[in-house]
Amino acid sequence: MSQGILFLISAPSGAGKTSLVNALLDAAANSPATRLCVSISHTTRSKRPGEENGKNYHFVSVAQFQQMQKEHAFLESAEVFGNHYGTSRKWVEDQLAQGQDVILEIDWQGASQVQALLPESVSIFILPPSLDALRERLTSRAQDDADVIEKRMSEAKNEISHYAQADYVIINEDFDTALADLNAVIRSAGLSKKHQASSNAELLKNLVS
Image 1: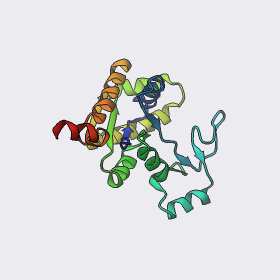
Image 2: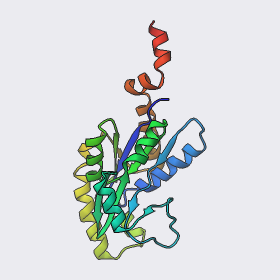
Image 3: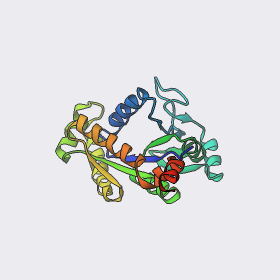
Image 4: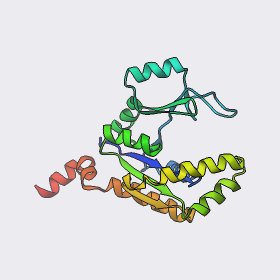
C-alpha cells in the first residue's frame, strides 16, 4: 500500500480555510477513490456547546497534555490564550501508513514544526484577495466586537507575512474557484513522480523492464 500524503493548510482568520476544507472533505466523502481525512487535535480547553470529544477535538486535562509532550507524542503543539493544542504524531503516521491522505489545519508556526519532522508534507496557504475583504468577512460574521476584529486583523497581517514558506498559495476571492484550486493541489501532489513511484511501483517496473 502506498504512503498517504500529509497536507498542511494555513490561513489567517477569516480567509475561508475551514469552509474550503469542509467542502473538500464533503466532495471526498462522495468519491470512493479519494482517501482524505482531517486530523483532530488534542486540546486542554473546555468543550463548547455542541462539540463532541473525538469529533471536534480530543479534550484532555493539562496533566495529560503535558505527559504527551514529555513522551514526544505531538507533531506540533502550541499554547493559545492559555489553552494547549497539539497534533498526535502516532495518529497521523498511522493514517499515512494506511494510504490515507491527511489534512492538518494549522498556523504557520505549527506547519514549520511539522515540516521539520516530516519534510515530505505539502504546505498550502490560503489568502484573502485583500485586507479590506478580510476585514469585511470578519465583520460580517458578527462574532466579534471591534476590538477583537482589530486584534484579528493585526494577527492576520503577521500570519500572511509567512505565506512564502508554503509550497502552494491559493487566493480565496471566489469560493468555487479557490475550492477547485485546492482540489488541483491535492490531485497534483498525488501525481508527483515520488508518489507515483511508491503507489504504482509494480506498474512502473513492468513498463520499463
